[in-house]
Image 1: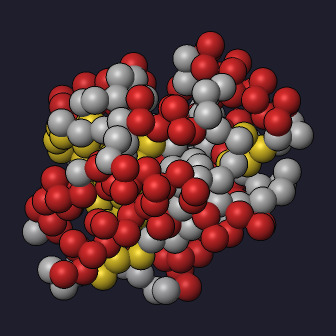
Image 2: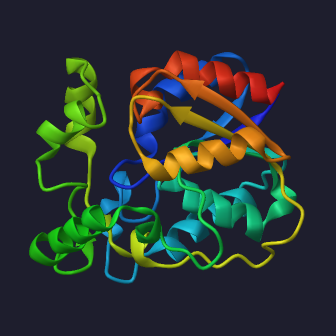
Length: 245
């Protein structure tokens, strides 16, 4: 049996993997879904000091304190920056990296470097106007009630009623702090990229193109929203179960 550690993106929390957790656990696998500092049930810990480095440490600590080895470490969206650094920090504990419509930054890059300039400007303006300069309340000027169904394509009413009240502002440092890899040229675990076709994103398309041709990578496509763990858990679980062997 495999051990999965699933890392959520900005604004969400460990709760967002609930459907996947049930499917993987039903097959006998162990699943951890930690919530990053300042989000979900840990929203009360948000502060200007919380950034990408904090979130990397969150996941490294789970692996170390739970004494986890050979894990399948998966992330969605901005969580890709977190797991990239975690695998670099504790490579002996990671068997396989899975990027689910996720960013794959290089050493020295920030998540904002991978976001279109107009979107980056809008996010920084939101943080300045509504988050005291350090907290990002949402992804776009539109309220979540409009953005999530139209852009992220979470349209099922039960999913929306479950998801929307649980979204929380994200410390801006999650996006603006550069990833610093200690062993960028060291051995890499097997990696898989899962591209969700209903979310147009040039960065994700570039990552997907790389995964299709680069050695050490596997590639899958899903006809799903950007958040398949919520809208299409069965299809995503099938890929994760396949990777578990």
